[in-house]
Length: 353
Image (cartoon, rainbow, N blue to C red; front, top):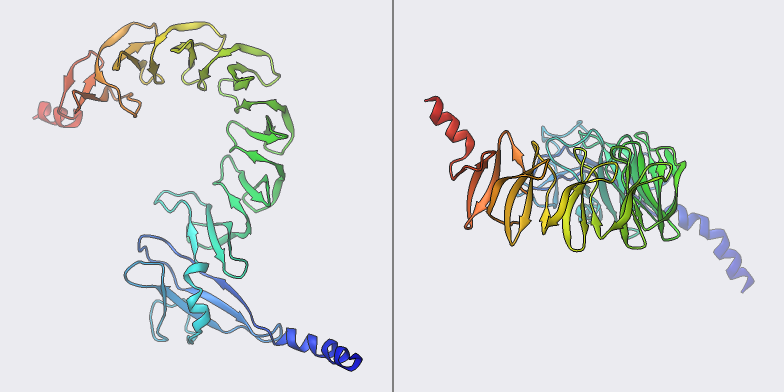
């Protein structure tokens, strides 16, 4: 028995050295977008240089990969390819999927890659050329906002900068993105605010607190909503059933089932008499009464009468017109309340002719 154990101990290092460890790096853009050939690095032992195998997406655009022919002109270099069935079978499970793959995506985009050995996905960041900029080392990642990206390690969240340096340690249960230099962060089931280096600005004792807009933080305490500044002076009392952040100097609030608007001093500017409403756009705001939509000005005067359908979209004015529904038909209304089924662009062209 002792001889057997001695033989086992003696042979174990050799067995481990003989094992093959495969690390796969590849890029995959959904919807059939072309991607540059990727590289699979296969390490047969630490001392052996890894051979390279090149793959590209199939013409159908599906996330399956086929070997590139050695004389294919699309390869990044002239090294010959070889076939590794096991690696090829794992290819699409190891593909990098860019979360935001739009044409105007940021310089660094969050992406995920499936690790077939650990059987889970990890998140990192790629640049606009789909080259890895920040390694896939996180359990989840949000997009960058104001130079910081929220990342999850285990069950905790923190923030990294564009170099991948952990600026705010991963100690929070949940975080929001940075806005105006601050981010919401939850610890001990309560929410507070931190700055972009992780310093506590408002301690975690609120049900909800948002980064400041117009210097005021939308806050919830014991189920009631109001606003306070960064030193926690209450500016709008915590009496409202619902509230939204300030926009264009006014905030929508709800009390006793009705909506209106308050200013940064807590003064009610638009009476709380509406069933619903939207933020002001070009000095007019959509409001709802009796299942109909109309528009008021900043003094609360009804400018466009309540004769339009209520929709899930919040209508707002843009360049003098608002898209609306009337009797379930699309149309546009101007600031004088005139309705037309013809788009504003078509009307202007016709007038010019």
